[in-house]
Amino acid sequence: MVTFKEGRLPDWWREFQALLQLVPAPCLREHLPDRTRRLYRWIEGLAYIDSEGRSHTLNALLCAESSPAGEGTTFAWLTDLPLHRQTVLAVANQGGRLRSTIENEGFNVQKNSGLNLEHADSLEWTKAKASYLLLQLGHLFFQLLEKGSLLRALALAYAKTSVARLWGGQDKLAPRLLEALRYFRLPDAVTEPACRISLVADTS
Image (cartoon, rainbow, N blue to C red; front, top):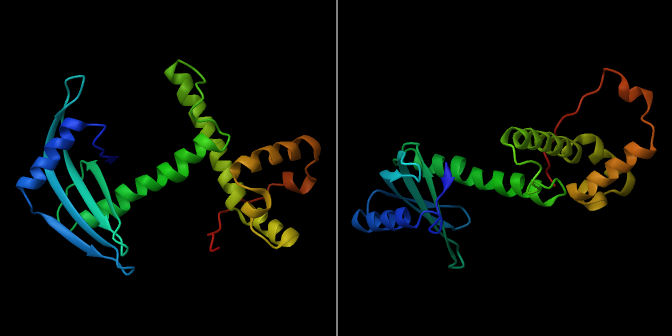
């Protein structure tokens, strides 16, 4: 599932918009508890030939959202998942919106938190994949550190606050962790096999 934007595939976007005008149905309306309204419209079987001559057939889904204040936002996605009244909400909320969350909370952190995702480590594809795998491992460790119960308990005991307020985001945690590894000897108990790292849901 990918985000569908006018600027990325302009010809396909124009075809999609034209078909929506010609085929007003199918559509589905959703009313949220906060009075936000969503109108879902979709077209199946859009044909596309890419720059390498390969043929693709995908479905396009559009969500026009209006807030109680009258502000409007439009989301659109391309997918090979079937679209009908029984699947549209799941595809949009568990597919399209979840992808946006991954991009915003995953790739964005990897780009802007000191992990330097955009840095060109190598022109060879195999080495680039290996570099990104290491970056993902680093990101995973920082999530375990930031979201784990040990650091949260320390922040509460030390300053009665959250990890983010005490030490900052992941870009602040990395240098602090590096300095700790440089200047502080880990206690022998840390090297014992009885050690577990787990995630705890953040309710703050």
